[in-house]
Image (tube, rainbow, N blue to C red; front, side, top):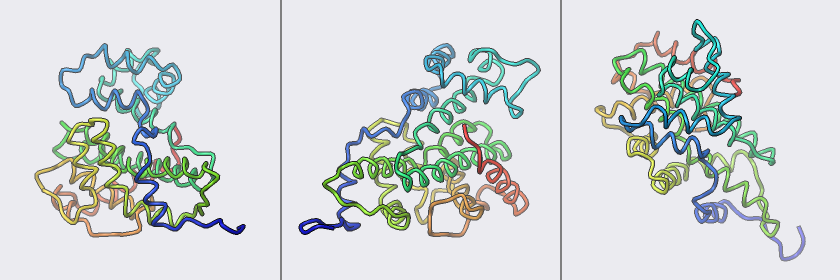
Amino acid sequence: MSKGEYMLVSADIRELLAQQPIALPVFHPVALKLTLMLPDPYSDFDDIVRVISEDQALSAQVLKMSNSSAYMGLKKAETIKESAIRLGVRQISVLAMAASQASLHTSDNSTINALMHELWQHSLACALGCWWIAQNTAHQSILEHAYLAGLLHDIGKLYLLKGMEQLSHNKELHILLDRKSLIGIFTDMHVEQGCRIMDHWNIPPIYRTVVANHHAESCDPVDTLLTIVRLVNVVSQKVNLSLDPVHRTTPEAEMLDLDETQLEKLGAVMTNYRDVSI
């Protein structure tokens, strides 16, 4: 390093990240629209189908997913509308959210790209884990909310990775990108930055609460959605699908009345999707 140059230390990087523009691409436009529409019980079927169908590449991916062995009906769906009729408009919406968000987890920086890949595996596994818990407990009424909360709970980490990617393109800065430092930044900043994003985009409060409290020391047992996400987040650590270095106990399992056998099944469900690419 030549005279006058310096290596930014962690504190400098954190300050720069906190100053990054809030409009960094952490939501696919389709995912953002559907996130705002899904909690509204009066969202129009045709409007949701239209939003998904506007992106041809996304529509093709959603159709591929909906016609997979996990969702396939007696007859192959040829259009998003047919899939929505067969699966339900809310389930097709969460499939579209997952497919659209997956495309944002890439980078031309190898260190960041590797972490983005791991983050996507974690987010998708948590979404599916939350869905499984809701489906297999007395909470089927919040299936789609559980899936989306699991998918978005770590949105602050994606924001921080996008911010780091942008900073790395500035040749006047000398940033050493290493996994340990990035995970340390995640630990300290992702909840705060995640809440900042949720507020900026006016994401419904039920998801903002999950982002804000999924690492809190305790949670309100009445908040079932938050309890589900917190449990799934802990299980993700046990099955090596987490970027969080701190492990904790799982009182949420007792709150949700899940025994050890069910927790093992949950871990297996999440692990099955370790290498899913959508």
